[in-house]
Image (cartoon, rainbow, N blue to C red; front, side, top):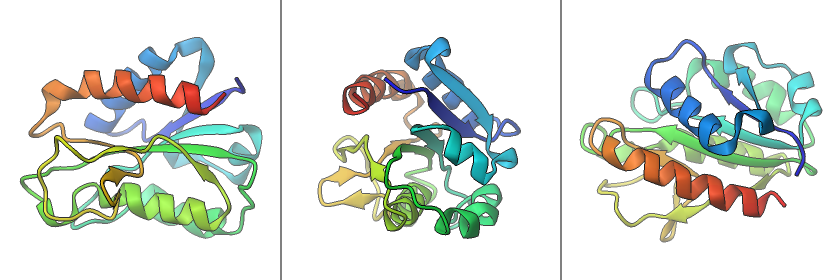
Length: 168
């Protein structure tokens, strides 16, 4: 398996804790942690596999660090790159745009030719709508630390096992 990068903001609370859990399950020696607020195009040229954190901000928006990098991302050819996206959202507080940032980021990646892996069933979640949902699945791993924190570790474990299979 090629070296993998996990990109998340080192300055957040909940997303950082979740990313650290993902690193622990994935295996610290198999993944490099990169601060999302310091990414460059060279970051994307240096790895074949990526796990990206996309927490949903406000009413269904990407975090500022992704928003600012999107123009650079849209100029890249990501045909030989594999991406998995996870994000935090709140099903009860924001049921009309639950984990939208996952879907927004995946759409951009797909437009750039990237292979996106890590889709999971939408069962077990209660929300009105999400840009991360396609049919009966999510295009990444949505996590709700506000309402379903007790499910996070199990969901991460299952997702990482799936990713490792899909990255082969």
